[in-house]
Amino acid sequence: MTDDHVCKPGATVYYCPTAGDTESDCHGGFDVCCDHTDLHQQLLACSLAHCRQAHAPHSWEPQPGMMSVYCEGHSVAVNPPAS
Image (tube, helix red, strand yellow):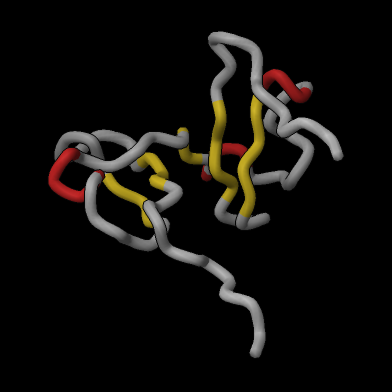
């Protein structure tokens, strides 16, 4: 059994919409997944209005007109196991 990786303090985690995955700068940068780093979105949980409710992952703007960030969702299976 291996321990889950924990990023070092101050590391920034981004969502890559091209790869559909996250990447952290403590793993060597943000150029591993694709050539479209300009599309990467910082991982940031969504507003308190949704935090305590189940919801799927989504992009959102912390304030109107700000760059989009990405919320990983809360208590929702993204790819439920096949039955």
